[in-house]
Amino acid sequence: MDQKITEQYRSKGVENFYKQEGDCYSNPHEFAIKELLEKVLSGMQYSNAKALDLACGSGEATVILKRYGFSQVGGIDPYTYEAYKKRIGRDAERFRFEDIAAGCLAERSYDLIVCSFAMHLIEPSWLPRLCTQLSLIAPRLFIITPHKRPHIRSEWFWELDKEWLENRVRLRSYRSMNLT
Image: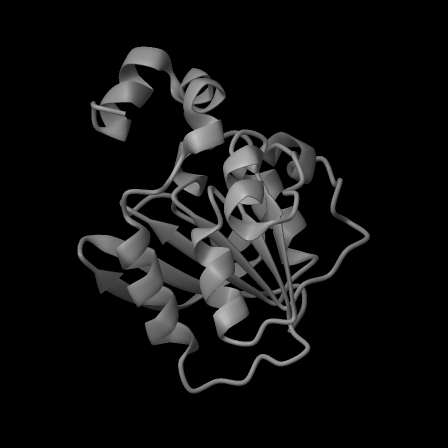
């Protein structure tokens, strides 16, 4: 991957980029993801907690969540599942954001969902449905993004709790208005 990822998104399109590069993908901002998650998770207990690494990439967030005591961490990514398996040693599910927005995870529950470097790429028309579905399965959502996007609205049943910034990468912590 010689070009910056954003340049490749423009030239190939997001979906084509991940179809071509997904098996060997590694987030170039892994250090910022690690720093932010460690800052937010330190000092808290998570034994027997269940997390979802949504748009899991090669498992950058999964590694940190396991280190901080989450007993169950599942990964979902329709493109980078091979990179995730290579690093984490188990399969990531291959659901797309549209599948989740349509309710494919409705029977599950998590203590935390972490979505890093992906939610700003969702087609805006899907974002309200996706956020609403996620608000029904977890009380807490961390969105890690290199942008101020996505803008999560309270009408989608999430309330912004706090925001952290590290090396121009943001972690926003949201509380579900459906599960409080």
